[in-house]
Image (cartoon, rainbow, N blue to C red):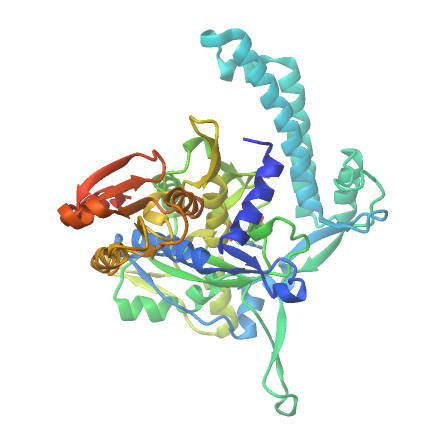
Length: 508
Ligand code: ATP
């Protein structure tokens, strides 16, 4: 594959060309960090949502779903801490006039040093071959140790500066680490400032005394304020979970990575309510369960890793990210947080309403602790798309662009292609498609030579193409071609549905 930057550019232009993702309001030159999903994009997105929902809600008797409103009472955000503390530290470069998140600059510096360590490890792996003991090498090689020490020290200083809200110390760290503007190379930095990420708007007319309200920056709070409504109506007992898929909005400072960091995005969150004192057990449980879920999608295992948080959010007593290797590096895809009883207690305090659960097993009333799993649907979409897109060189020296999206997630499952537009082949093809389309999203295509049509289906990721030819009219067989292997096989029409179902079968 070409280098990662080129690959990322190819993903973005492919996404646009084939109707996966468009810039928002493109005819007006777009709106920064806001995107629209096209015909194929919304199919893939829906399939991802459905897979998550089924694995969370349908497969777990003790998890139920809700769909809360985007607008919430403004006190919600006071209680959750977002009004006062949902800030990112920002810093500007005086020469390039570009704005950065100070924490991201430090993170990228750490990633660069980690890259150096990994290079040492790779070199040694080559040198020592089968005898190589990576753990021992990492623990003893002086260059690796020196770099690791630098990373640990930078992380420590950053954490303590942020915890102390000492923004001058954050700036000093950026200077001490000799971090330059990635665009201009300049080290001419402004001071660091805090910036609140919530979007606000007005509700009601000014004559009524309009109220400032916020677009929710996370879906979680809609779950917390409904905790008792759900617990009582669904008759669930602790431990239980509430799942939700919905839009969230953040006025991100730096939004340059396509759908990785958007100002309007979609979250799939699940808040799991547990007995106080049992949260660490459940935190470990969900960390593991969520990683297994990711692996079940079928993307390469080595693209995932856990990353424990350095800078814990104000509500958490343990937090980890599941990171994914995007074309621009290992970045957060999902967060698993032990949120303690912070949110429910805060809502209790500000609303004056009890948010407690009576646990019949131990005869006690308590405010449950919460373990959260929170994944960005758009990031998941990007993970799938950027991994799936490949340019392959074929045996005859030609190349093909193919989207190897896991078959069960593909927007279209089947393409139905009459070999020619004559001799009743289109009618036969439509008849076959009618037999399949209730179950599978199918696409009919009769334009251009068959080879060209195969390429078009490869490029949008359709796992199966059925070709209807003259023999079909004689013996009711079609050719089924598989996207990844490009193998073709003749099978009876009556066996098609069973064959496709078998190939699409997917277990969690
Ligand atoms: P980051 O550190 O990358 O800003 P975060 O730690 O603020 O992310 P959380 O508040 O934990 O993110 O949100 C949960 C999930 O929502 C993230 O793991 C991510 O997948 C997704 N997410 C957060 N912000 C965005 C965004 N601006 N665009 C797209 N997805 C996002």
